[in-house]
Image 1: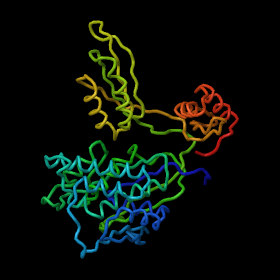
Image 2: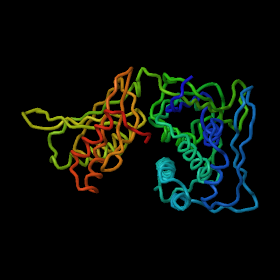
Image 3: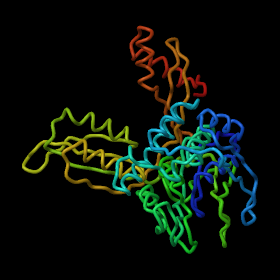
Length: 400
């Protein structure tokens, strides 16, 4: 075993994924239920109570996260603005609020696209109910408590057949769920029924960096979140595996590269375009000067991202540039393992990015920290940078 801090969370979705399974799996990993419950109570939503029960599914001990609704308390109809108000009023970490709002906005956008309306007019039906608000916020609270660096997952098993929804009988996956899963690897099977719910689909699409086989890591703990159904041939559980990346340094082994040649756009529009794609989740984005057809000067726009961000970033590129076509390919890569430390300098604290593999080590002060400390102290950014670098080279660093 290892004393290193776990930095990878891997979800095995061979039995699908749902919001309650997601939270249950993280509770089974050791997230404190009482702390989670206390944070959720600050949302100010009445008419429910929470339980985390130990159950056994096909011989697998699991945690069943339950939202018990008080049928005597009438819940109002909720649209996106109501959910936003609930989350923003909660006493939650800012990162949790931001992540939960992003998940619900994603759900609203997909529901609106399916039903041919706007996100403001979407009535969430089951998705906007109390249990789904609790599942989404609870999932992001639990992830925040774990504090992992990277989340990966297997392709999602969606099930087969049909499911009864508010609008009638629908094929599996239901239209909104299918929309939420765009860009996510999925597969069907012989299990009849819905294995991936809209909430489960939205959470997986939002938080998972890459989908594929379990990464190379030293496993530190395994948790199981139980679903409601009992499946005939398998445990209806979502498995969550917590671990430490091995020293091979292979991280994000497969990425998507998106490129476009542009020779008819004013240069002043390139910086905001690069900022937009980086803000949209790209791992990197850069410009290369080129000479195009007929001798025209132009730029090659290159964006590197995970597969699940492709659709969003393609939209950003088409909206923010004059390109009329994009090229895409997948590439393998090997990265140094990265972590953050802090150098305590005479100018103040500066974060240090540490990258290492097999004994090789690179260190680099965070420039924005150097600039901020310089502005506060009256020193130059270079002086702060050199002081922080000297501390890093002496290995005089503390945990971030």
